[in-house]
Image (cartoon, rainbow, N blue to C red; front, side, top):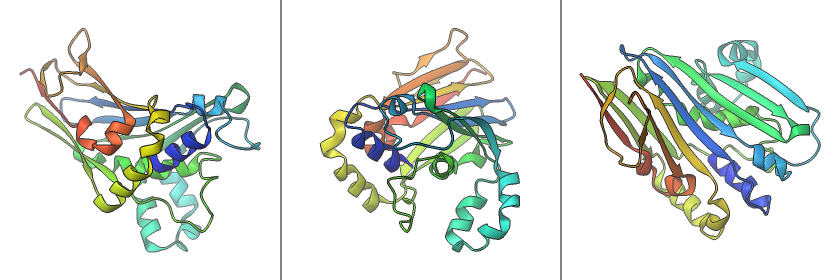
Length: 244
């Protein structure tokens, strides 16, 4: 998914910027909600999403559990690896909001959880969610497989301490992708990945000094250049200690 978006940005020949926002609401018992929103409005404004589409306006939610049940017969014909990727989306919902006339396109993938460890597969879900956006895979050949997951994220919450730990899944493929983007870095400077988190208690201490706390100290925002994050996922590693 990340690679597809970067390719679209390059092909636009302008700074057709997309933005990522990862939002988390964590409850005292460790349950909560998490989502990642992708804003493609500027890409749409520059026509980076390609030719005419039969869909001009859309505001819909795809409930993945229902979708997978409805499509189970066709999904059963896919390779086992692809079936497993789709199976992992079962507890996620995808919200698509598109208005081609107004050059607007946003989508997010979200889930609720009983324990934050349940959403360790969030980046894979985001990668797969892009396939539901009309026109997103237009630059990918029909017989070409999706890009493998390169960046993963582990989450934990224990004894009032929250941790976000990003890591590289496939170091060889990751380095190839980083090398392929070197000549395009100047055009990708407007792409950011933002964390927007809310906790059940005030924050006592946070590992990244660039994080901004809300007035009640229960929320934080942290924004990093996406190209820098892609090259070094540790940039958005985070440890948050809550007050007793």
